[in-house]
Image 1 (spheres, chains in turn blue, red):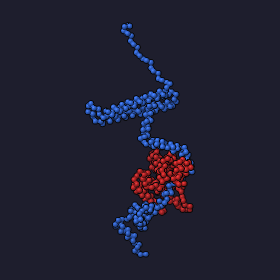
Image 2 (cartoon, rainbow over the protein chains, first blue to last red; image 1 turned 90 degrees about the vertical axis):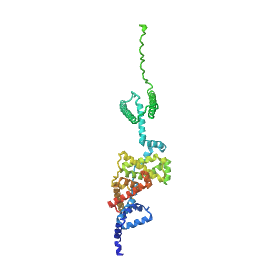
Image 3 (cartoon, rainbow over the protein chains, first blue to last red; image 1 turned 180 degrees about the horizontal axis):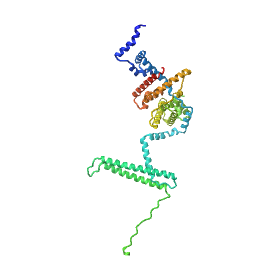
Image 4 (cartoon, rainbow over the protein chains, first blue to last red; image 1 turned 180 degrees about the vertical axis):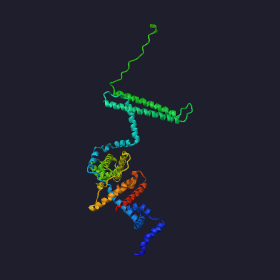
Length: 240
Length: 184
């Protein structure tokens, strides 16, 4: 062996130190592809050449190979003996695939926050309508107490909603530019009048619905009309 | 049985085929859930939930090639929901080393088996020391074997980002292994 060959690595290191620096950083960028075997031939040759002379990079690539060999064995774990039976039991009792689209669609809809809020809003509206219906006397005292509590809370919430709405409307109107007096109504006044009309119609329709529901729920107990309270006529002056 | 044929039978409502399907995939599903949540009981529940979800989606199952990524995606989403329910707790990797006996070992020689078991335990320790992002990347790519394109779709990141994250994660893991003195 040529005695000068032993000095070659040191010479290479010295030259690299004075020129481009060590190539370990470049190797780190290529090491994964080299281990996977996806590196093009020329690059792979260069990597192999560097590895022959760099123990640190040799160690890194060796550990990459170790990890690549061992990690896939972590993929599958035994869930235990009763797992399959419990899954089969669950899927046996689960609704079949025929019902799937409806249930799946409903579940997906309910996972959306906005849809859930809308559903909560509709439920609140329905609750508000139902709250106007008097409770039957035959109901259990606990249920009556609970219903009374719900009503009280709901009324408080509705009062808060009303207060918020009024504050919001006042704030909105304060942002609006001052309207010049004139015979033509502005966009906002048209909008508010339309909104008012719409609200009025909706309230009317809701009131009708509540009345119908009440009539359907309590057909046998019509509310007794008050006695006619026609004011007594004053006697004719001629009769006096 | 060929995967496509099994899938067709499962979709046709064959209960035996469904049982075979569950047995075939339960290890992977449970493994992913276990590596995410770190608790066998919760992982078992999540794996069951995954299969119920799959059962309800039978008419819309992907083909055999896309099945595993699809199932792993469902499992991961359920795991994320689990963390969200538990107040956004980050994935834990507190799997005790002694529980790694779950892992299949192919070696017949007991000495070799012991050696491999030790290496796996150290590898697991190294995995626990990774950052969450890098650990998830190792879990999806190197453990579950998903392609980078599938991981990019699953995580909602560009392909280039997935690739660079995977490289970083593997290098970090190799350095941890070096630091732990794992033999090559």
